[in-house]
Image (cartoon, rainbow, N blue to C red; front, side):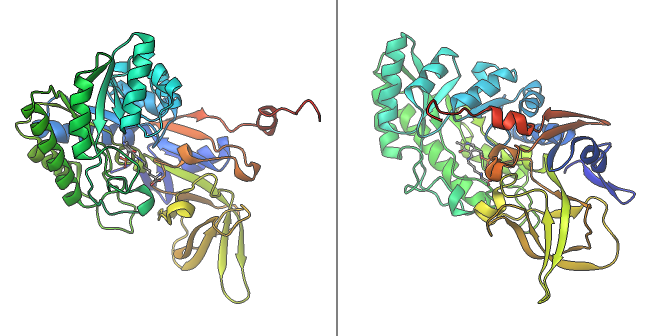
Length: 422
Ligand code: LLP
């Protein structure tokens, strides 16, 4: 459920008309609903608790939506943060996420990033390979600070979904195999600078079928049992993120309640603290990208292009993954619909949000909302074509705040410098 609804023929975010935000801030702009973020977080937490998962660490995947105000909103509810760079750790800390609720993942952490994570005492570093384990031990020794680690295991499970975001097969770059995990865990336990506390997995994103998750979780539970059987201490099991959301062109994703049942079933009796790294399921339907129609261009042979002021640099998912986003008129005209190719102004054909989609009729100046854009929307935006970085607005009830302003052209240019010979 989200808080973007039509009220008397006009799309609102909570109690704010999207048209009022467009008027005040301009377009394109991301608009987020506080109530939706809060609802998604609490529904997931309550579902896990209802299945007997005690005090789960719900570490929001910062990459899904890295805005500080969004992170603060979630941190206030008790969310942790799953981070994959020093920048993300800094964001989580700045948003008030306590270090003991921050998990640091990623296949290519640099030594500087590892040192930063150890300095800030994040709760655990998820180790993705043997060379990384060695690097962490060396950095820890250099700092004189023992590193708390967990091993990210690649459970070799096909999660379905888009190939570019599947992570759980052995041909993907993520994590160690089960055999490596057992060997490295034992090795780490004998290293004075490493404190292995658990194991982790994350098999992919936008997963709409619970079967691969159940398979991966069962394999992880088996690993925990084997490690404990070898006399090793395993306190934590991190089951990653990946739960899909409705984008309206796919099968309904499983509910958090069904997901929680699968978790509970796989982990019953394990006696480990559980952690999760959800991103999309919390953020996607809490945000929209609001844009304006620049032209309606009808070709004589029949194609009709809806040219917007938003482009692939603002919302990359359709160009990158052929992703589907529901496209709605902020003030839909009733009656006729027409097929549109919805495109942005960037100079490549990939800058196409959808082709031949039947939509209510649009005219120049109309406002358009891309739904389910709160995850991997603004966080993947760029200034390609020298288009100023898209701003973000957070709504709460009848109030809204610009939580990332649109940079001016002066600010955009001032970030660069000339070279001495120019
Ligand atoms: N944990 C790890 C280690 C991850 O790599 C990811 C996402 C997550 C958690 C969160 O997954 P989620 O719950 O959001 O599915 N840009 C793509 C999605 C990339 C996901 C990368 N990893 C998209 O727009 O669909």
